[in-house]
Image (cartoon, rainbow, N blue to C red; front, side, top):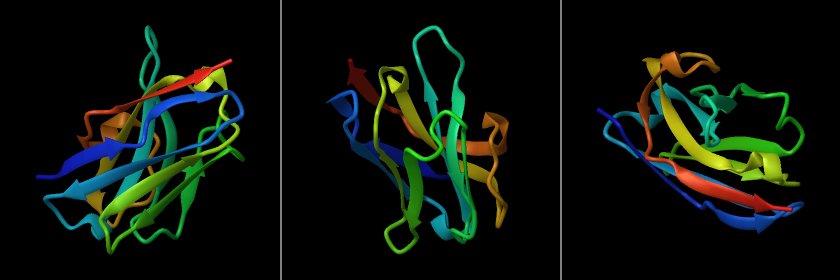
Length: 126
């Protein structure tokens, strides 16, 4: 069973940057794809970015493409989300998630992830 702990959220002005981290434990981190999702008040949880188990591939939501970058450090069992050029509409709770199947490619739907962190709040002011 995996445990995921996010950090790095906070309040930032529009145009600013934040770097989220997600530390994983409990299973072999390097064997699983990782993803970031977000949920704004009154909205459904939405996909943000994902990275394959070997970092061979990444995928992004159109809304963040070119501004966000997902990466992973398997030696540290940590996945990152670098967020640049932040906009007020990026305000949400951000969750990291660990893939359901080992050695899988990137997935974009929540049901393809088995474990979730508690979330970290990101607020972008205009």
